[in-house]
Length: 528
Image 1 (spheres, rainbow, N blue to C red):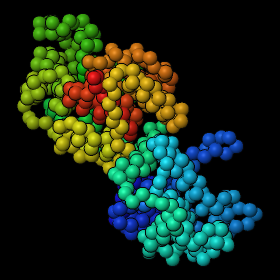
Image 2 (tube, rainbow, N blue to C red):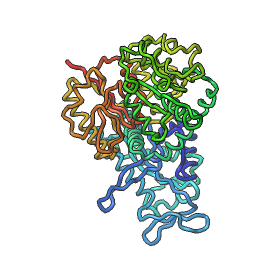
Image 3 (tube, rainbow, N blue to C red):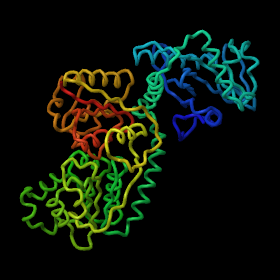
Image 4 (cartoon, one colour):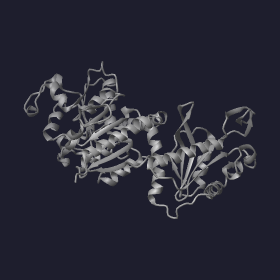
């Protein structure tokens, strides 16, 4: 069975492509990878426009083919146009170039892109085909398309697609001298290129509609969890990075105010996380909902850190519901202080934590004990944030998240690089961001530069070629945020550039690596 990308398509462009996808999956063996709906860019009248390869098929040793798929029940060539006809005789599609020419343009784009990215000549087979799964047209390939029949798939071929694909590779490979040895790096380069295209498009917000459907499913899961816990006055939820802890905490806080008219505190150690959730909902009239960092809470209560175990808290400063996010960040004294902010023994107290993100070296075996929670935690086990490739990478590079299930959203493997100086890192990041924003057109607000706390000062005001803000988290479309790893806990971005020492603290690395949704650059500093 072929390896499909994406593995689970949320919505096909049409039923013809859906059926063709299923047929390729079932008929091709696992040394074939099939990429569906791969975006590329064409120029028309000197303007850049989106184009697309319906299918790209790669073989582990041979190379790749681009396939244009057309529906309808016939195709004709008249008025210098190729027209697809439906079963009523109506024209449902027309273009001045043939489907074969469309596939050929895709092929040439990807071949050039490969050589541009890797700075080496592409030395495998590359070819193109047109597929008409609903009708017979293959015998007219030469007269209608000026192509040999080996480049055409029609209705008669739909039960023997492997033979068609193999014949196309033979046809396009007859004048190419393929190296006898295909290295793993050759294979990886080709697949990374196509996966990178998916990731870049996702990073640009091109998959918003698909992601909204995905988020609807996630929201349903989270809402079910909240409903199941509705009758518990105290509980703890434990989950690895990306399992949705912070969003569940936020939803509980919001519903406790809007639906039950409770006075609620949602608290974490991070100013950035608190600021982020305050921007997610118009809470200007919700004076009963306080989303604060720990420092801002002390400031609001006019209490110094050394006074938390001494100063009496007035009744008006206490809460019906207290929700602790990133609870592993709080020590025993802080936990006891927060527990005492409840209005009464009937108040609700909820704790969300992940002991694998313990960057403050607290005693993890005491996290629940410190907050006076006696029952064991509920466990979240499914990663909802990162692509499969990013999360599997994190599992490989750290000892964490071994019990968490990865989702099936595919993407490129993270880019991992080691540099011997800060200047080398800065030059690489400048070039990378220039490529992402200028060539790939990824909006700058979707890119975040995360730096481990111990080397943050070396990069916060370096010689950057892009506009940036330090010590802030915004979605400002004019700036890239440069933020400490500790401040970015609980947050995420489409593209993350993570900078840290070669032998950095593993808890910090786990946090930094799991912030990326679609594209991750893992950049390590190893001074000689």
